[in-house]
Image 1 (tube, rainbow, N blue to C red):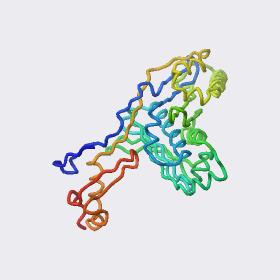
Image 2: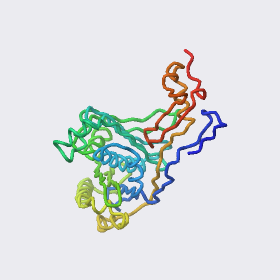
Image 3: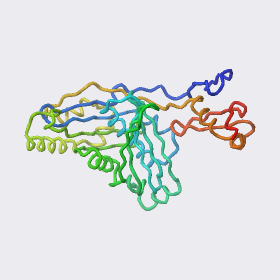
Image 4: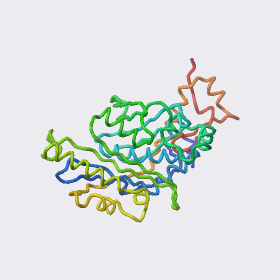
Amino acid sequence: MTTNISSPAFLDSSRPDTPDLVVPQGVVPFYLDQRPVRGRLVRPGVLTDTLLTRHDNPDVVLRLAGEALALVAALASSLKFQGSFSLQAKGDGPVSLLLADCTDSGALRFHARSDDAQVAELLATCPNPTAGQLLGKGYLAFSVDQGPDTDIHQGIVEITGESLSDMAAHYFATSEQHACWVRLFCEKTEQGWRAGALVMEKIASDGGIGPDISTEEGDDAWETATTLATTLTAHEILDDSLSSATLLHRLFHAEGLMMGQPRALAFGCRCSRARLSGILETFSLDDLDHMAQEGTITMNCSFCNHSFHFQRDEIGGRTA
């Protein structure tokens, strides 16, 4: 990356040389006509590999992160907001922190903090650990952040379940109090990492939102939709040669399938020299002196794994 050294760090909005990658049909919304079912099919494709391979976490941790990215893409695309939608899981397991977020424009990023020694110890006894084993006991939070002038809307639940799909479904059952069906996928294929998600919600039919049908008819339609959804395989959703339209037609063609306008997903780290310079300015002068190595302070973005270098005399810091 070429840095404009004539600009002060706090004015330097230059970004790291990260991929300018957009997947035009990363999210396909759909609903089933005259049935209380709407959903999202998420397939980030090659974007998954680009996001995950910038990090040096163990593969089992990257697999979990890929599922989290697919999940936030699905949920963010179902909301009307301007800002970012994030998932944060904190636990006492080998993965102490998992953070993934998606902006209203579909920009994705993630960070996972894992103890490689603990992960290796777990793998020695369990070659394919679950999300529950990786995260341990803790909490799962979903947040909508629309900027400094608005309050952050957040829902928090205890981590419950073995898979991230189970944890998300538990959140919706306890916090949102409506039926939600979630299946997440992520694997390292011959083409690289691929992830996907199929998320469906049951719409209330008695509040003018869903179709005008009886409760019994709505329950039957929901059960049919979820039964059909369980037939979707990892091989299908992670196969780049199959379109999302093809997959949804296979699943729901007999159930009044209606597809909406696809939404794009993109590589979405939002770091910059100016942003990180602002963070450094909050440290004391003594702290900054200790950070400097041969007159240079190095900060690493945990989302895109890019290192930023600042000359010590660029950064002011606190005097008291």
